[in-house]
Length: 89
Image 1 (cartoon, rainbow, N blue to C red):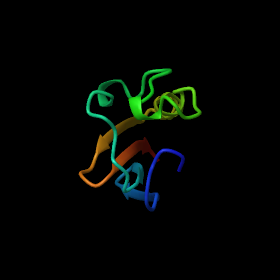
Image 2 (image 1 turned 180 degrees about the vertical axis):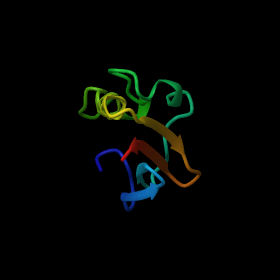
Image 3 (image 1 turned 120 degrees about the horizontal axis):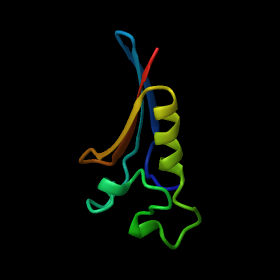
Image 4 (image 1 turned 60 degrees about the horizontal axis):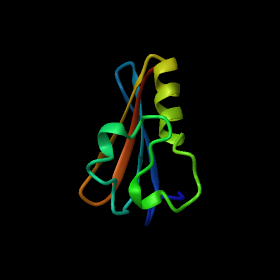
């Protein structure tokens, strides 16, 4: 909510024995050079360096996904960004 723009949406879908949680927004997305390190501890997108935050949020997301034998990914959607968790049920 702090870094996105427009409506922030959370969707949950089931695909077989997997739960997919996806958070999307209509903001500018992540800088392309940030995407490969988005889940690194203390990584912050250049535009957010002047705002509050430690760069740990997405690292926590990946840690929670891994602790539950799941995965996490981040991407630009062309009209915002998306963070997706894929977890076993």
